[in-house]
Image 1: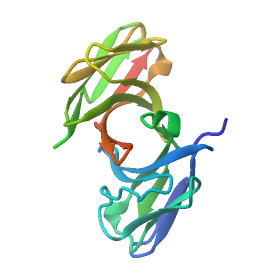
Image 2: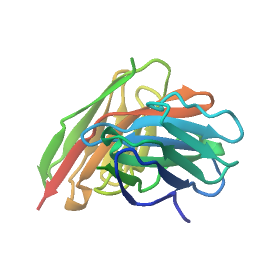
Image 3: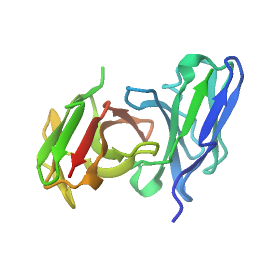
Length: 114
Length: 112
């Protein structure tokens, strides 16, 4: 079956511009996570959605970062006024309700801020 | 503070030369120890989850083990297609979910 998909695969933007990244989870997966992977560093948790519950935003690095999810479908991660330190690969993962522990990752969006 | 440390950072093996990758961790409220494989330009691919000390899981040439402070990923008779970065992560409960804290990975290269 189809896995987690993300778009765009690559995004180059200028400092100060806003960007929007999209994640389509595996159909039926109730939990959705966003992570950031900077060069030479481990993946960092950003935000977690579970059904209609309030999201866990504890990993968002600043108020320039926000994310939304409609029900159990698509999620968008928005970065406002991008900075060079935002350059990274942004990864989305989803989990089924029956096994909320195992996360299945998408291919990521590589963001480059010039 | 929750921490995951992987060693070595990089490992070069000859085909058939078995070895082990290490993941040491300090975490309060462990909810699973996870191993992923990541190929260049791709997202992490799930390999194993371990929950309690003494637990072992196997898949093809890979075997993961867990103690109270560390996990090992043993690679037996590796092949070039096993070349990848292997990531270790610990799961921490977050409002019913499972926030993962990752190590920086071990980059494995298997040569003919």
